[in-house]
Image 1: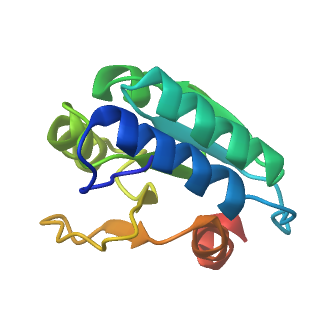
Image 2: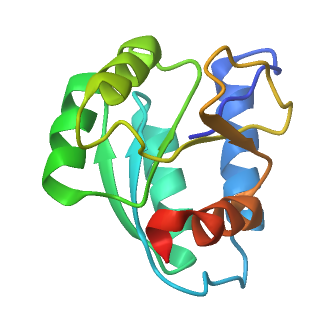
Image 3: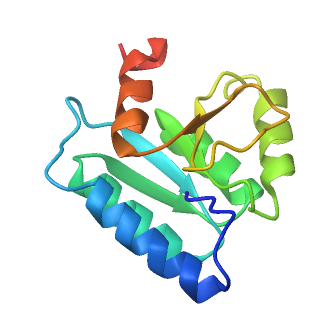
Length: 143
């Protein structure tokens, strides 16, 4: 998801996110479609991210919290989990993933133009959808 750390209000952030999502997804299609699990608690952002990913040729599953994400990841085995540092259950999500026998090596990414510091070094911070596609393509699980 989109973890933006600036803007004066939620409406400003959402407006920017929608513009960013649709411009970043324009006319580019991933080389190979992958299933991406979007974990986001704000419906509007989840819908925007899903639309942009689908426009790029990916299959998208959505979850709104850590427990739901783990259940969906077990069922669907996505190529990546795309989430948000501001997700209330972010730390729980990372703990559950890393403790899970089958999901501990799951690729996790955040799209953020500000490149925030993340204590979990296994979380990939990317600046746009092209970088996200490049990350998936370079992952051993996608080959």
